[in-house]
Length: 149
Image (cartoon, rainbow, N blue to C red; front, side, top):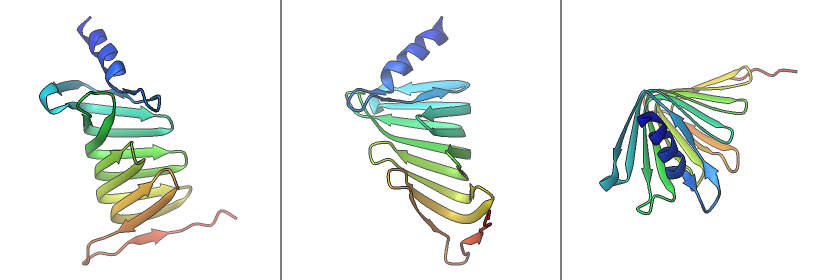
């Protein structure tokens, strides 16, 4: 019964009434810090919003003061993000649902079709389907592009 209460609570909490978007999150544990408008999901975390899926060890959701809008989602530990044919793996990620931008940090691996890119950071504009990849000055972005023709 306690678990059902939280599922209902999360559904209400994560529905953005302005744009009718919703995010469904499942995990082993949930900690809610109401004073800071933060929900911390940990252990086998899986989140889905429309066609964006996120897996991680921990997911921190920060909402607006009135709890009607999600301001930011941060994923930590073995992060995997999938959207259509694009898959991104990294150490940490930040998703801004308002601007529809995704940033992944750490040992980043980007897979699309059979092509692979390795870098330290990627910023993806999900609205415009554009990406910027970069690495530290001592490392370089490495890409293996495979033409399927």
